[in-house]
Image (tube, rainbow, N blue to C red; front, side, top):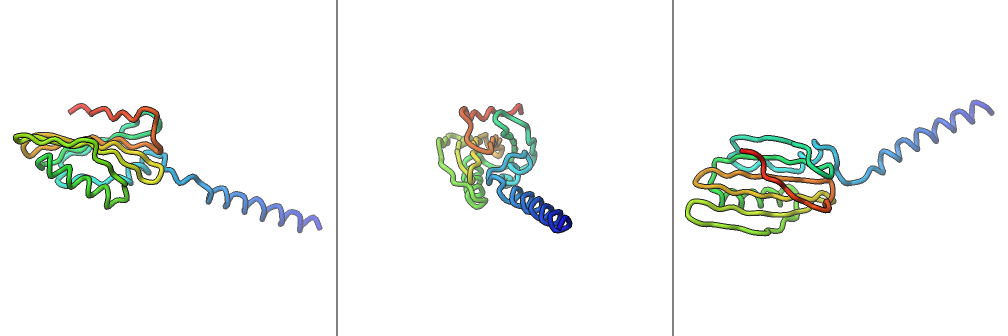
Length: 143
C-alpha cells in the first residue's frame, strides 16, 4: 500500500508541474521573447538593443538606408506580416524628409513604432512591452 501511495503522489506532483507549465500566460515578458515579435526594417545597416525600459519593456533602434516615407510604409507592412495589429498615428512628408508613428498590439504585447529621417537615411525607434503600460512613452535613442 505504501508503494502505491508513493507512486500516486509522484504522478500527482508531475501532473501539477506539467499543468503549471502549460498554464503560462500568453503574454511575453522576457526581452528576447519581445524581440522575436519584431521584424527588422528592410535595408537596415545598424541595430542597437534590446535596451530595458519601464514596465518590463524593451527598446530597439534601427538605422536603414532608405527614404523615410517608403521605409515606414514597408515597416508597417512587415509588422502586419509578423502578426501585429497596427494603427498609424501620424505620417509626414516634405522635401527629402518624412516619417511615421504607429502603435500596435500583438496578443497582449503593445508597441510604439516611430521612424523618420532624410534622403536615404531612416531611423526607426521601437518600444515593446508585454502589455500596454500606463505611460507608453518611447524615447528616441541617442544617434
